[in-house]
Length: 380
Image 1 (tube, one colour):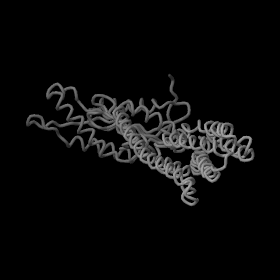
Image 2 (cartoon, rainbow, N blue to C red):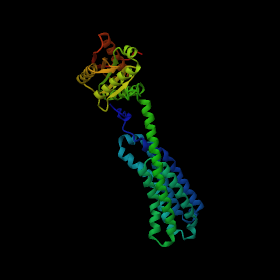
Image 3 (tube, helix red, strand yellow):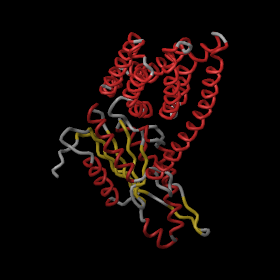
Image 4 (cartoon, rainbow, N blue to C red):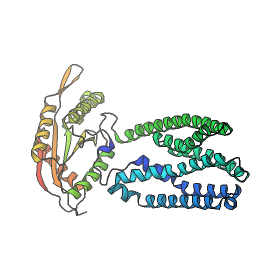
């Protein structure tokens, strides 16, 4: 049985959810980098004293911003057809502006002793510290990217301080200490993010799983059925649904009590889990004593063999209740259909339910199978 939502068949190309979220979160950087440089140029007098540098950097940052906006606009399309290119562009968009500011910091350290660069260096230092703080908060969910961002924005200045005269050592030391502190902060933020992801995963599991049997619940089954139907409608493959109902379950509950009834349900669920083991098999409890199994692209022979095997295995098992052995049987209805455009997924369920009803009418403890056929149009 599939144990995670990700085992459901995708109707699109795989989507790196975290990276796309980081792409969205970092989009404001397009404007931050430009506005920050404009302030440095104006307040630091670079606009008048170093116009070539100012306009050149502004032009590069504008170009990078346009690349980021365009790649974000076409993100889904690019990811679907060229996922490796998308990842490369994503990393480039995240790191290139930081590398430019890191290079500018190193350049201004070399010229900070000139009067015309003194103010620019001060403002640039403040902006770099702000970018480091904002960048690691933005990218901390992906620790490797946050570390890379920190390196490209700090290493040029640190190397400049080490390789030039002692006048810049205090500046390099300041950037190094702030970088070291930030590195530890990245680890902390990433740990908190991972913890939140685990908690969210546990909550999602609670909404998807049946607590008594630890198999999927009705809500998850309905979502899976609709998704499978759309996927198989596109590829023209067959889809099988087995509905399993415990025979005379009400009498078992009334005679032996609900704790024994719970044991019966758990035993049937365990048998189903152990019998349908493919990653794409969906086993769910959809009612009190009713279960469903959804199979992707099975053959009729395989479905019949599995259904008969489950029916036989359950009939040979028994539950102990106060020293008395309780025999349990099930009725199984099986439908194998090929989805069509003018039909809905509930058509598959209706056919399987009719088969289940026939199994009960014919004496229970048996399997009724509908041979492969195209789905009929839903009249509703």
